[in-house]
Structures are given as structure tokens and as C-alpha cells.
Length: 324
Image (cartoon, rainbow, N blue to C red; front, side, top):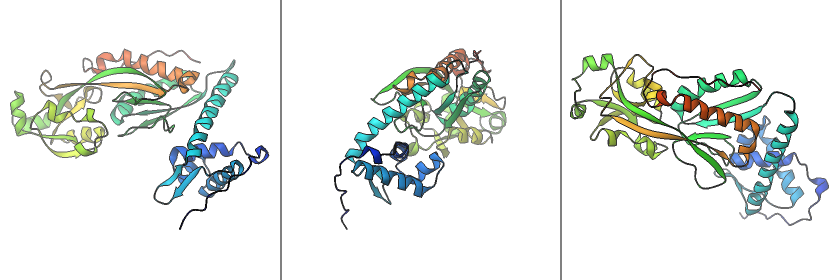
């Protein structure tokens, strides 16, 4: 059955409810009315009704809707998205400048990150950040996949790769090292490891190759050619806990394993992997003071912990933050 096209209508600004644009924006980003409803704190029917009211007011179809595909923007919807996105950023900037005049810096910042770095490094660092900025609400998303800046899943992202082309600002946050680790129990119960050739007789915990969200994670085969992995996961933290059971070796970031006395580095001069993290955000958001404050703090925290991240120290350092 063919969809009935919405007939062009003369735009009547009196019928336009500006709050409907907020509902449109969330549906466009999540591509699901249910997802938008959850983020907005309302029910599904309210979202659907508000989107339909906006389409009626504008006299055009903004989404192609299907059960399998969700809410997909039409060409007109894509055009509107660019304008509404800019409106949101302008309102945020104006609100920040007016509301924070003479008051402590406040607002909401969502930080997306790789799972291990987010849990083991960013979580404690950002917890300390709020000592100085208690009015800034922090959402930390440590997930084993990429977060989308364009869909506003995060305001700031820490990634293994530079962002794709687009209106983004990014900088290299830090380099970090990974080394081969095992528990003392594992080393006592298995054949000795004196050279890399001895690793052929051992098993590893590693990533699932075809499910790794970044090619940068596929370092086991390059670091240990011919390595046998019979326990695999999409999660660095899962590998960390699996290795703690004393039944497998694992290549882990030094910021996760070096401060854990249960782990022993294996062939630390021979098995060394170096990777980098990048800090990025949308160009328009970078101008917001709360974003700048978190951005600068993360760079300072990474710089203060250069030795820790590179495996040359086993204690995390803290940054003094000026209160707002």
C-alpha cells in the first residue's frame, strides 16, 4: 500500500509550537520515538503526537516511518535538522552566558569513552573534577563501541581514532601502552616464559576479531604471532577479569593492570603495544564554557599522568582544579 503524501500547505507560524522542535530533534538523533521519549522523560504517544503536530504546522513530511527502520529523516527533515541543531546550540550558549553571570559554572556535560579508559581513568578523574565544579553534571559513557557526536550521544568523546571529517574539533589526548600480563598463580602453574617463542605454549584472553569496534584493538596477533586465544570478548574489562582467574595471559592497558598487585608483567621489554587516545567534540559546542572547562581538565589530567599511562608508574596522579 502506497503512503499518502502530505499535501503542501501554507506555513502558519501561529500553529507552530516551538517546543515541538525539541521533540523533533530527539527523534532525529535516536531514530526511534521510544528512544526520544526516554531521553525526554515522556511517553511514546506524546512524542509521536508532537512530531505529527510539527509536520502539520510546517505542511511537510519530516520522517519516513516504519517498524523495522524507525523514524528516518526525509530530505525536508534533514534540512530542518541543521537549523534546529543550530538553534539548540545558540540557546545553550545564551543560557550559559546569562545564567552563569556572577554564579558558579553549571550545566550538563556528557563524556563518551572507550570502556577501559572510561572506567579505570576517566571515572576517578571526573569524580575529582566535581569537587571544584559541583554544579556541572557529568554523564560518563564508558562503552565498547563508538559514540556519535553528530547525534549528541555525547558532547565530548575520547576515541582510539581521529574523528571522521566534519565540523569537529579534536586533539591528541595522550599515548598509552599495553603490556602482557599474568597472575603469579598462572605463572607458577604453567611452563616458564623466558622468550617470545615460549608463548606458543600458552593461551590468551583477547578481543573477538570480527566484533572489535576499532582495528586498533586487534593487536594480539601482531604482538604475539601465532597466539592461541580460546577466551574472547568485546570488552577490555571482561578480559581483565578473565586474566585474574589465572588461566590465561592478556595484553592489557598499563593504566588498568600496572596498579593491580595481582598482575605480573610478562616479557615487559619485548611485548609492548603503544596506542593513542583522541579528544573530540563538535565545533559549535567547543565554545561553551562548561565544555571548555571539562576539555581542559581532561587534557591536564592526561598530561599529569603521562608516566602512569605509559606504564612507567603505577600510581594515578591528580590535578588541582580551581573552583568555579
